[in-house]
Length: 92
Image (cartoon, rainbow, N blue to C red; front, side, top):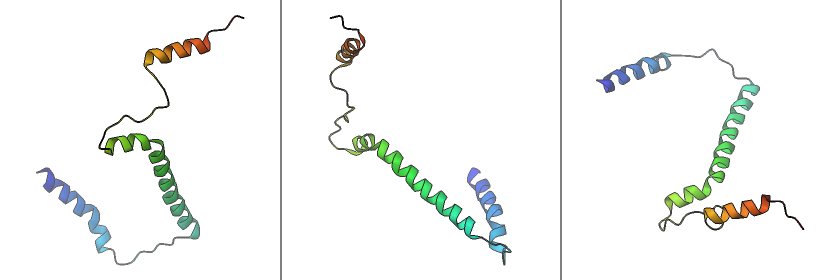
């Protein structure tokens, strides 16, 4: 029933575009420039998102499933000790 209902809605939305004979519209150069900026912005945003998550994407599709490097070495306990040592004031 849901498929039938969605088909009727799709036909109702597309029917006016199919029956339209001519359009009384004008696209000025600014509109074309705006459309170009939207497309380029989308492409750049998508490429930066892929760049930021590249290691995770590569890990997801890799065959050997080795965890990506996070830039942090050692266990979490070793990291906590290193943080404490770097934040503790040294007395000479």
